[in-house]
Structure formats: structure tokens, C-alpha cells
Image 1 (cartoon, helix red, strand yellow):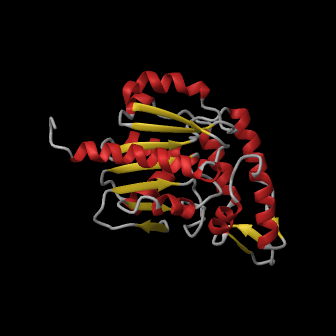
Image 2 (tube, rainbow, N blue to C red):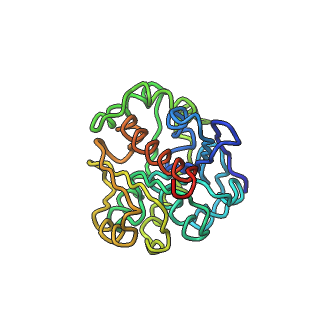
Image 3 (cartoon, rainbow, N blue to C red):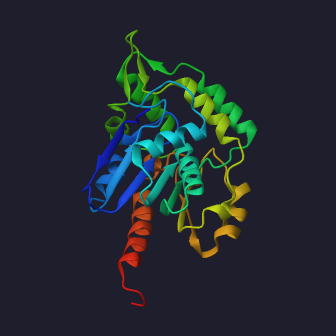
Length: 266
């Protein structure tokens, strides 16, 4: 089951694997990749999303199997948003050594069941629009609660909000796979101690996905390896705080890459 993979940057450069959240797609990381031209950014469309296969099963282990088939297990920096962050964390836990650095963008590592239920029920509703413009207006109105700029939404959704067989515009993902993913996000993840690599945790200050119930345990497990940044906006930090998120992640990745390149004791 081969995933569709988006790529930017030179193939011989240090590799960064980017995993999007539910209802999104790999090109969510396009501007992020453009801001780091010295890196090879690889961003698959997850199962049930974008141009990747839609057929079940869609459990976490199924996503991981498809990811390993698509991107391999060569060491790389792993960047994940929301459900993609849970997958990045699981991948690092199941395959020690695959993650040289880990970036968790407003991660859905463990969503409380009552929040997962509400999100899954919302995911069952038909999100369709008469036109692309109507869909953009609706999403822009929603994002105004945070800070996402209109031109960013138009650029990213141009290949993701598309005409369906009935002529209405829908997002390019399978609703059933999203419902399953919310159930998976409510299951117990591996212990934080199992992923002891330099980790950047980026949280949206007005996100609906809580992390307070996990933060102390994560800090205790990683100590100095964990860096935490709280940025303005909501859950989708690469929309609501694009520049701030890129700055934080780029600084984190470049600092660790520079440290790896330095001679021992330099």
C-alpha cells in the first residue's frame, strides 16, 4: 500500500520527515520546506488522505507500516502535527535510531476520550461547498478565531478542496479514516522514556487539543532533551503562527545539525 509522497530540497541533504494531521495532506508543509532549502523535506499523504490509498485498515500500526514502506528507516528528523505527531512519536518508539530529532507540533499524543468523541462525531458530518470560494470563506471565518492568513489557506487548499462527483467541493480525505484516527488518539501511547531524543514541543496557546495532562511526565522523562515553545493561535500552528513555528523549528533543527557536524570537543 504505497503512500503518495511530496518532496522538496536536494536528495543528498539531511532528511526531514513531516507527517500531517487528520483531514490534511503532505503539502501542508510546503512553506515550511521552502524556508529550509538546505534540507530534504519528505511529507507523505497519510492513509485515507490526499493522493494516498483510502481503503482500510487505518489503525496506528497500519499507518506506521505504510510509512516505513514509503520512507524507509534511515535516520531523519521527524516532524509531526496533531495525529502526525502521534505517528512520529510511535515510529520513533517502535524503531529506535530512526529519529535523530523529534518535533511535535501541537501533538495529539493522548486525547482525553470525551474530546476524541466530540471530534470524531464532528468528522462524520459532510463538509461540502457549492464552490471553492465558499469553502475558503468558511475556513477563513473559522480561522479568524486564530490568525491564519487568507492567502495561505488559498495556496494550500487549491489542491485539497476539490470538486467531487456531485459537483460540490470537498476536502481530499476519507471521513471514515478520520473517525478511526480520533479513536486511536485516545489510546495509550508508548512511554515518553522510550523516545529519548532531542525533542521540540510546539503548543498553540488556544488549541482545543490539551497537553497539560502530559507535560510534566514528558519533562520528567526527557529533562534537558525537551524544549517547549507556546505560540499564538490555535491547533494548526503552521497556519495560525506560520512564521513563529518555522523560526522555532528551523532554529531547533539547524542547531542540532550543526552540533552533529562539529568535531568532537570543538
